[in-house]
Structures are given as structure tokens and as C-alpha cells.
Image (cartoon, rainbow, N blue to C red; front, side, top):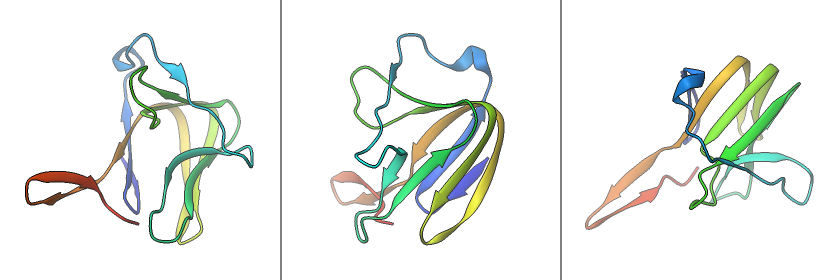
Length: 106
């Protein structure tokens, strides 16, 4: 399991990747963005050989990461994390606000 700020990247079995995922698009700079920081505008970005980012059809945020070669998770305020080949679930940490949940501001 890998954690970078408010993003958790959890290894899963390939069989646990749900069918019907849609490719997550790249940002204007061509990056695969897992999450954007609300306070600074910095982004958690994944790169590497054979890296693809996927989302559930009814969600805009990426939910799954597939790494066929090697991957690297980067953010301007955190150290980089090497990701070995595999399938991953992307989880955005949330915090409780009375009456609701919201993403943690990183």
C-alpha cells in the first residue's frame, strides 16, 4: 500500500478490477492526474512505462491504476513513490465534517 498526502494507492488482484471502466483523460499538460491539491493547485501525477488510469463510468475522478512496466507517483510537496507492475485502487482520503464527508485538502 502506498500513501502520498491525501492519496492512497492500494494494490489489488487483477480479477478485482471491475469491468466497464473508462479511460481517465490527461490534463492540459498531458499528465495522468490522480488528484489535485485544493490548497496549492499541485497534483498527484503518475507516470511510467505502460501506466494507464481508469475511472468508473459514473465518476470523474480516477479510481483504478494499471501499471504494466513501472510507475512513479509524484507531487511537488512529497517525495516520489516507485510503483511496481500491478493493479491498484486509487483512494482519496476523506475527512468527516458534521453532516457530510469531504476530500482532505492536501
